[in-house]
Image (cartoon, rainbow, N blue to C red; front, side, top):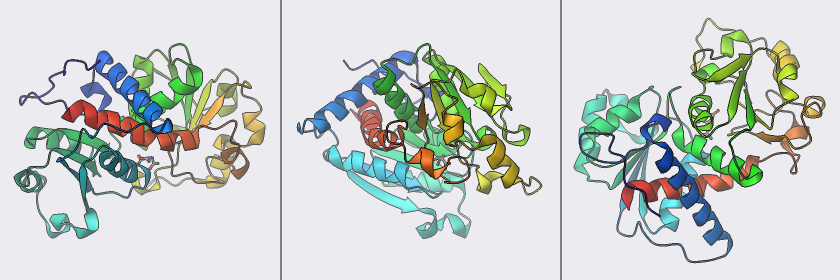
Length: 311
Ligand code: NCD
């Protein structure tokens, strides 16, 4: 059943700028809708063409494989058109201000804007200056709400429910928007979330999240271990990572996986840096990882998000 929209901005539109832009019934609605899209797709049932005649603008100012492709495929499978602009082809490099960019995009009257940006909070800025719904495809280190939603769907599919699970997120939680959105979403859904990593990369300020430097100690009671890439492009110049030491302490290899409960599943939002945060052997263990399922669910989750903001 479609939930009533939660009004989060003066123009009474539903945006998905961050997990905090969604309340619990809306989140549950997105997860249920995503599941029903997944079921229809797997049963070869026709998908409702709810985006027919609609133009979704994708502005991707940082590199992306999974998020961009899954948004584009979601739009097309629901009958809409996806118009893409990337940083290389845009006038942003010619000194155009953020505000002027929004005014220009608005003038094309898209039905929704999907935006990936280098700056924290840009999705909220765009939501204030656009007349259409805005979906955040990742802004700086701030939020990546649709990734967290697809991760929650994947966990729910595998475990039946999220409430009561312990999810260990290991790696560069300080510079990871995936970690930030997942911490907000999974704790809201009743999971215990634990960030693990070296001090320089550990976010100790995220609310309701346990933090720990000791990966080995965190494994024994983890139901899910989510591994993250070191966000090299976001690290301050002064921070030098000793990769040998990092791999020694924080890489998920077979020996570490064997310390986890037998039911524990490995997740990774991608892109994986094999040999750094995850070994080849673990990455390729089909029965202990949910990584490909995460990619598949990216499309269904983004269908549900578009459905929510546009239907
Ligand atoms: C993540 C991102 O862009 O934040 N990737 C993704 O969207 N699947 C994670 C990352 O880049 O490490």
